[in-house]
Image 1 (cartoon, rainbow, N blue to C red):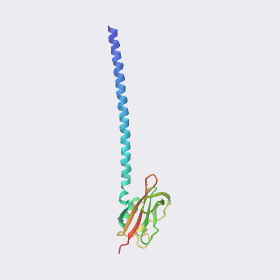
Image 2 (image 1 turned 180 degrees about the vertical axis):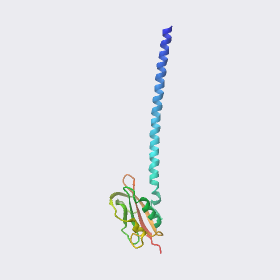
Image 3 (image 1 turned 180 degrees about the horizontal axis):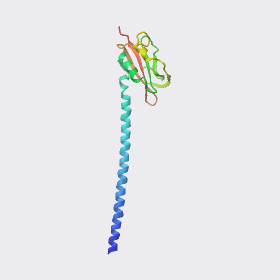
Image 4 (image 1 turned 135 degrees about the vertical axis):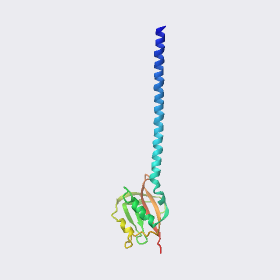
Length: 163
């Protein structure tokens, strides 16, 4: 009788141990899935936030002062270029990096870095130069992305010259 009782206790212990291990494995697997989902959601949020700073420039009309603010804000950004076309400088001046652009001016454009610009941003604040950006001028802003949908640059084209 004593042996049967001991055997039942050992069997119950083994059964409980297996059940506990099974529960731990199930919890671990479900925690892994939750972690993967959270990481994907966090990555999506991070991408949206990094792109949000460019939505103000996505096919909008902005002032010249906003153009000079963008030049200051993004001048040291890696793999990024800004093209500013003024009333006096129709071909434009690249700041930061020079981009090679494909696509129509009126549709989505794709660009890749093609070199480094030596242009001096301070010229955009000095009325003597053709690169001067009039703070009250109006500029059409466009965002340039690469084939991976990463923002690589901005294009500002002056539309009106203030009197």
